[in-house]
Amino acid sequence: MDKEVDLFADDPGRFERFRLEFMSQRVIDDVMDAMFERYGEALKPRDGKEKELYRLVVGFCFAKAHKTFHATQRLCALGFGEDAAILLRSNINLLINMHFILRNDDPVERCKEFIDYSVHERRRYIDSAYQAKQPEWMEKVGTENPDEMKARVYKWKGNKIRTRAKSMGDERFLLHYTQGYKFYSSIEHADVMALVGYIDENETGFTANSAARDDYIGLVLTHNVLVMGDILIGAINYFGLPCPDLVEKLTATYQALNRHAQDQQCTL
Image (cartoon, rainbow, N blue to C red; front, side, top):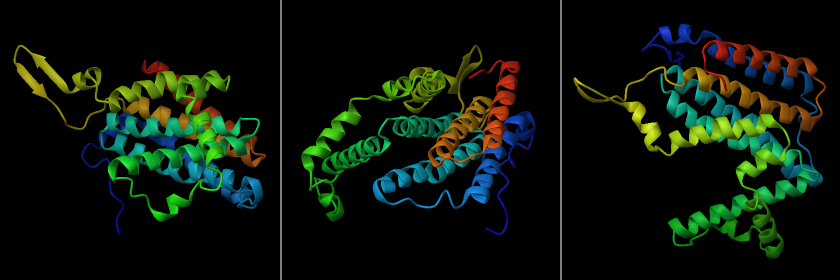
């Protein structure tokens, strides 16, 4: 692209209405840039038993989560806060899974559980959607020790997302689930409570409104920083990076956003 798209072109005032929330998103990229600049050596691939765990952490944090973090911002800039909340829900799921794996006494084994569960679920999908015509590479996965794979699948399935969030003994993660994930699930599932926000009925008539608007933007942008920040802290801890200043930068950003949210009566 020769020219960067102006996401605020349709409503230039949106940035000013949510200036702090939009500006705070930049802290995440600043922290990530500092991590790579200072600790590039420590972030290099790991071999041996941690090979797959390393790939999972990098894939979680620096690829999927970071992309979704930016996609959430863009939807908010366009005035689609409800749709952004659905993406944010995906990153909350990722955050809980990542910390559930890394905080385990044996994160390598828990990583295997998650991988085997993921393969199992993809197989189920292909069996249902494509008459069990599995790709050749997937037919080979887990064939060496099918009983071990099956045991790991059921072990992961036995821990529902709320259980995973609660098991970490950290109220912060349970709040991500109870106050974020569950609310955004209502929007994703398009239940009645989510749909009524699009309908206006009064003495003058009935209106269904699908236009861009400010609803949920402040909440989602605030939570977007909090979730991505906690994902980064998980990576910082996994790689053993000595960067208390970066963690403090994230914490100070959380606190400023939360104070602002309380002032706006929009607490997380």
